[in-house]
Amino acid sequence: MLSTLALHMQTVAVGWQLYTLTGSALDLGLLGLVQFVPTIALTLVGGHVADRSDRRVVVVVCQVAQAGASVALAVGSHGGWLGRGSVLAIVGVLGAAQAFANPSRTALLPRLVPLAQIPRAIASVTSATQTSRIVGPALGGLLYDFGPAIVYVTVAALYLVGAALIAVIRDGQSAREREDDTPASLFSGVVFIWSRRLLRGLISLDLVAVLLGGATALLPIYARDVLGTGPGGLGLLRAAPAIGALVSSVVLARRPVQHGAGPIFFGAVLVFGVATIVFGVSTNLLVSLAALTVLGAADLLSVVIRHSLVQMRTPDGMRGRVSAVHSVSTNTSNQLGEFESGVLAALLGPVPAVVLGGVGTIVVAALWMYRFPELRRFHLADS
Image 1 (cartoon, one colour):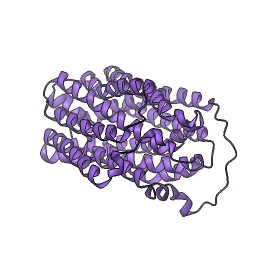
Image 2: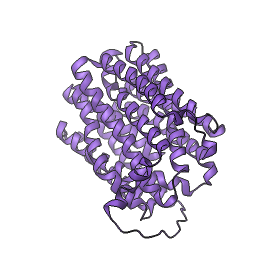
Image 3: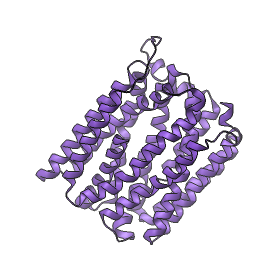
């Protein structure tokens, strides 16, 4: 919860600060690109390490690195030397630490609960992190009024406290079979997913849909230029998807999806696309907040179904590497989606960029219904 709170406070501060420095939509897209590169370079290695190391230690070390990068942002902001290049470089370090930690963090959860309870556990954990996603952007926007350095110092403290709490989790790891460190082992997560058509279709749909629906990268532009609000309004826009996701996760924690997971998954993707279009054309803050709330609820529903299926159909000895591939696909689509949105906004304007993304998401969902008919029929209860 604390690391998620820190991440989203930081996202608001960095986005607003960079847009204030440069006024460039393309630079907002570059924030996604500088996180994409370490995601591609490090996540598979992080998954390999997760299956051979204490997953708690990996997460702790990465969060300490994130705290250090946040301190650098604070010092640079306070000293007045933080510019476009240094912001992008430090964000790249943050992205590298996040990319390396994600497989270990994801693979740790199934060791703490019985297999049959994984969908409910994922929904419950998501409820906690979504609370942080709601509070984080709003708190980041409010604290930014006192200066960006205040935000970054607070973020660094949250990362350190979160790392300390993760360190005392009782994992109870059993001894793991030792495999040779070979390229085949490194990419075995890719082979595992590719050999299972259901997982391949599920993950590829998410990758393409999120790639097209990266509207959140343009929230600083919408806040200032379309909706006429300030950092506080940006914080609310950042928080709105998390509010919808929190409501969705609370419902799923009590009533987890089991039967009919396939149709529900496709319905969530379609609603995500429609909500993206509504947000794109809205010039009213309340309507925009409502659209983002629905978007967040639909996205969370699809995420819980996807994560549950992947974790339930993966043996523990492979979960780090499979989680790494899953993380690469998710984070790559998010970060490249931000870059794609920034480029389109620079070429066409923010509104056409967001609307085209929403339409594209709907078209892709329809194509995947035809291409992967088994996605329309799967049940989590069968896993």
